[in-house]
Every structure is written in C-alpha cells, then in structure tokens.
Image (cartoon, rainbow, N blue to C red; front, side, top):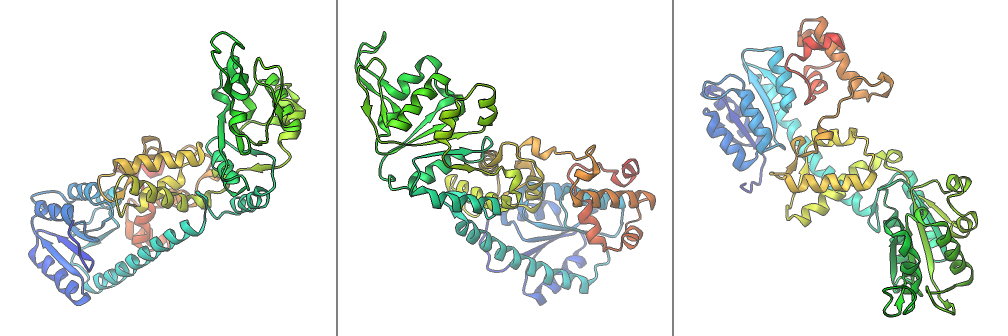
Length: 460
C-alpha cells in the first residue's frame, strides 16, 4: 500500500468520458483521481492502494460491477464504493447495498451532486479520524487498571474498589462468568498496602476433592502416602500478601470450615501437623454462583459466607453496560494489533454493527476472544464481516417478538414492506417514507438479504 498525503478517488468505468468528468471534478476539489476503463486493472489498483472512495460502473464487458464490488470488499473493506449505472434496476441496487456499496447513482452523473458527495465524504473522513482519536483518548481515560468502560454501573464499581482497597481483609466478588472478576481481584491487591507482596491465585473449581486441603494448607512429611517432604500450601505462600479464591463456591463444606478458622484466628494446620502455624493473609473470594441460595440448600456454610463477604463487589454483566462496547472493541483491537504486529488495525462500520447487535453471553472474555481471533485472521488493516465468527455473522432476528427488535431492524422491515407494495419502485418508496434514496439504501443494507428482497418482503 502506498503512502498518500491526500485521499484518493478511483473511477472504474468502461466509458472514458465518464472517467474524464470525474477526474475534472476531483482536480477542482484537490482529490487524487485514478481512472480505469479496464475493471481488472482498476481492481488491482484498489488491492494495492486501498483508496478511500471508488466510483464503480455496474455494466462493463470485461467484468460485472457486482463481481468487482465483491472483490473490493474482500481486499479493501474500508473503501467506500458508489455504484453508477445507466440501466437502473431495483434488484441490482438492493444487491449492491447488500454487498457493501455505500450508494447507487444513475447516469448521466450529476456533477454538482458529485461535488457535494466529495465534500461530504472528505468531512466524513475527518470525522472518522476525530472519532478514532477520541476513541483512543477515551480508552485511555476510562481504563482503570485494565478495566475499560464509562457506564454508570462500572464507574460505581471503580469507586467501590478505590474505597476499600486500602482497608479490606476479606472481600467477595460476585459476577457472571467472563465479567472480569479476576481482574477486579488483581486491582484490589495492586491498590492495597500489600501490593509488594504476593497475590496467590487458587482456582477452586480445578482442585481435586481429595487434594483440596493439602493444596491449600500444605502437609508435613509422612502425612500420607507420597508425602516425602514438608510442603507449603497456597495459604502460607500468600502470607503477608493476598489469597484469591476464584470460584469459591466450589469448595467442599469441610474445607470451608477450616478456612473460616484461618480468617478468624489467622492460623492454619498443615495436613498431618501437630501444631498450627500463624499466617497473616487477606482473602478475596469470587463466584458466579448465588451463594445465598447455596446456603439455603445446605451447599455453602453461612458462617463462612458472612466472614468472607464483609464487603461485596458486584461486577456488572456486559448486558447491563452495552454502552461500553465501542470502547471495549477499540481497547482489544489496539491490544491485539500490537500483539500481532498489525499497526493501524481498524474495523468496518458494518462489522461493528453486527458485533454491537450480538448478545455476548460470555461477557468481556468473549469480546476479547472474538476480537483477538478477528485481528489474527484479518487480511487487511480492517476487520470486516468475513473475519467475524460464524455465529455472529449468521445472526438472525427474524422470528423474534417485534418488541425485542432493534429500531434499525424495525425500520428495515417497514422499508421492505413499502417496496413490495410499490413493486420495487425505490423513488416512489422514498417519497412515501419521507426519506432520501440514500437513506433507504442504508436501511436495506443487511448481508443476509436475498437477491429478491423487495419481493420477499411481502411475506414479512
């Protein structure tokens, strides 16, 4: 890809006069123009240079414009493409928008309209750059020890962490799987007076029942078969520091009773030892379970719960802070762009829309994993729809209760119904709807639309 000081507009049209007209307007606006009457050569130029805007003719003898558009979206997904044609067709217009075109114009080209579009496009590019700069600033501003967001629920959690970090002895962190409970625990330790001492992490769900006590409390030589020497447990390893009990709800009841003694008396007894040892350890527990319900069912000790949960920190699920999604996308894109050595990595608007629509049942962990995967497989400096995991690409809102649909989806369906009633007459449909044709195309853009969307809309 060549470095350019000014944006570039590429014209791919088998009519030389059309290319010359666009070049004339581009010169007036100070925009670099590259014109091609051969679509194969034009496509190669786009692949190598990834221009900001392409004016693409629909009907060309060497290669169909829709085929060229499909290839452009593969090699330069960040490029805006405007279709131009002298033979208007509703089906081709809808299909062009489906494939990723940003607009669809009829010939002969209106030069005043082209000038206005170039001005709007240049301003849009400036806004995008300002938005990117702002996103980068926001991710830094709203990055609290690796936790990114500015939603009220998250800001409340940050305030709570700051207030208790200097004083806690025991804390219980509650939240769904993947919400970042371990990161909260790490932050509590970093902000505490014990930050220079060890933070020992114990995944309670991974402990074998028969070895839980020896792992936590340690053992003395000869305590059981295979105990060839004295061994320190995780609690002692955290002495003068912090012990993090991840998934504390998985601990056996007998182990909870012994841990309660550690919390109350600051002493433990290694397996097989005759005398207890004194320890000074702060304990953070985390769970995705409802411990109060487990207490009612006799699966968790009430006394251990109240000793551990002197202070509780609820971690909000992503479903309760969806306004943080854009910042999270930017945060993880930047992270994995650095990790995979892909400077300037970005995301197309249509990919971001699909990601924003997804429900994210795996919370922050799922967001990070998806962005990491996309960053790895992206062949250009833009993450596009084709780079997203299949379940996200194949999202289908059809069949949901209309009250659960997004406003954009409701608008799109209504546009389809109007088009069907008017036999695909886009101009008339725009008049009936009280919107411009460009807006109408934007509402129609969905990658899962069939080619005969206007006709199929009658069944919606």
